[in-house]
Length: 216
Image 1 (cartoon, rainbow, N blue to C red):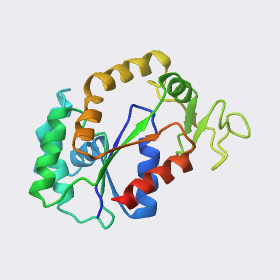
Image 2: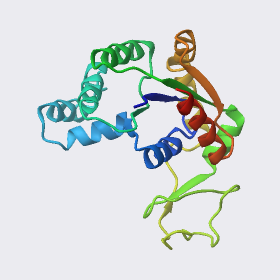
Image 3: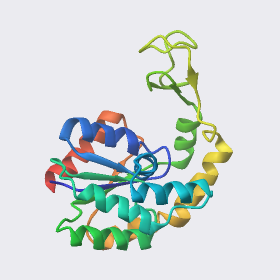
């Protein structure tokens, strides 16, 4: 079993690579957003706590997120776990390390998906998805064959994320650099960090990540 963290700014492709690892290696993706939505709808005691916090418009505490991850770690994953979107801060990284140790587990690797900011902005501001099947397109690199129609399912429900604008992305990048980029040095010092080119072709990125996992 191999546990990894995918690190990188918004739009670096962490979600795409996590999905490939889930499909190809039977790993389990632990996405903070997905876990919170699942907990909120679960009806459990933790779920009621999450719902109350979110309904008040408050930020979910680190303790709650660690609690949700702890529950997930109690269920075995044949290929291991992918941490996507957590940790975001040095405090969270310490807490995750302590949690894994308490479960008799560890991190095999932290993969930093490096990107060039200008290229990332071009990538993100041009992307759109099918609201019906989830297929992803791009104005310049992967447009639909017929304008306004999804190649995969024929739906005309194509949409863009409201925050996929240049101004919004710059705000998200600044937040990443302020809070999350210190993790790069943190995991480098622990000899866990490997960097890959996040803007390479999807298959090439996947191959680079696979090399890291097979080494671990």
